[in-house]
Length: 171
Image 1 (tube, rainbow, N blue to C red):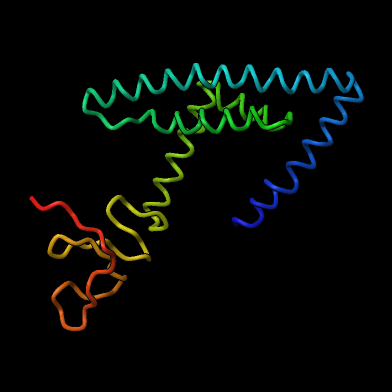
Image 2: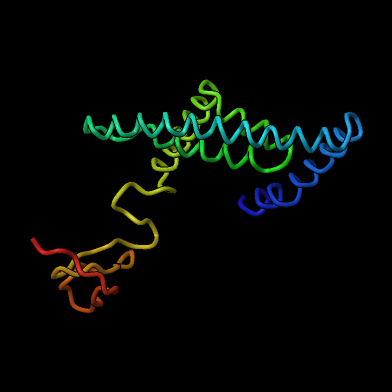
């Protein structure tokens, strides 16, 4: 699944973007097209900065109230919108603008949350504190280590010592 997505992202999208830029340049002129792309990047960066500061303020309010910062996903989407708007091209600009609009961002957020919940339910994604097929982090005598899936509990015969030199603070 990842290989076709990467091919689309790094091969097909740039070809489509170049085609559209050439078509627009033939219609309105090269300097006008370059100016339009620069204008979209500058205005997009300004809007991203403005909305990003709003999300940061909302996250700070949520943290001060002792709540989980649910606006963190909005911040990630605004950051992605900024990257899309600064990248030269009209297709990426459309997706960047869609991520900046609060109603469409809410739709993206809802879809992402639904997708993550489905992955957690199916066991593809892991819940906090678990590391799926990579095992679990264990703590033995103040040291953090890694335990492979299916490995015995610490102290059992044949159980390997924890890997990793990370000292944990002692109470």
